[in-house]
Amino acid sequence: MAERTYNISELAREFGVTTRTIRFYEEKGLVSPRREGRKRLFSPADRVRIKLILRGKRIGMSLDECVEVIDMYDPRNNNAEQLQALLQRLRARRAKLLQQKQDIDDMLAGLADVQQLCEKALADATT
Image (cartoon, rainbow, N blue to C red):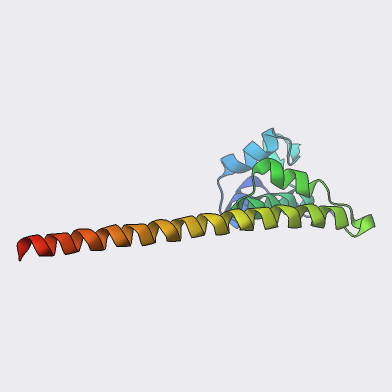
């Protein structure tokens, strides 16, 4: 039985990206579709790789970070090294986002204070 293949349009539709995005991954050597004339045929492994790259990008990882973690895949060793590297990146990303959230909350509180002072000053000036 022949291995299932996917064309670029199917993958683009499935993952909600443009065919240009998938071609970019191909140009970068991140996926290696088989060619039949001008047609690109992606393997299940290519499909999974695209899925993992896009998942990593959605959580704020750079393309290089995604690829680095994906390339660490080693089922013979329970993927421990890959999982440790991913956890380290996730923790760092989460800490950075929490700090940014705190900074935003602090700015919003500051804006509310200034807004309240302005509204009070305006009310005092008109009475």
